[in-house]
Length: 133
Image (cartoon, rainbow, N blue to C red; front, side, top):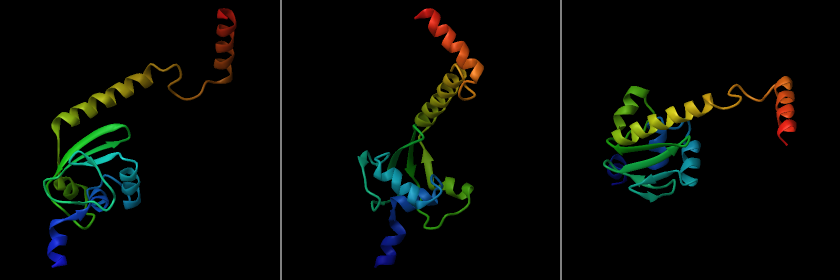
């Protein structure tokens, strides 16, 4: 009887690992514990069992993801096969792309997009600050 149930349900952390959202199950568990992953709109634990048809909302690297579970696979398979396990919400995908563009644009307009200022840059900043203060 347990084998029959195993074919229809799967642990959330294991499914996220098998669907290749995370490199390890430990990373998936960490994100679930931090409350970044919701199933059917509710915060869940690592041991939550999901079924086909569940909706998963996830925040990964401050970017939104929303998808519907289409299949369960108890083994980690290649990426093309893993993409068949879920269907992503189109609206959330466009929101994520817009957010990526905004993040990229904000980096370009930053004073020092390449890292911290050089010694010369710091001297120029100090000079500007002294003149205005």
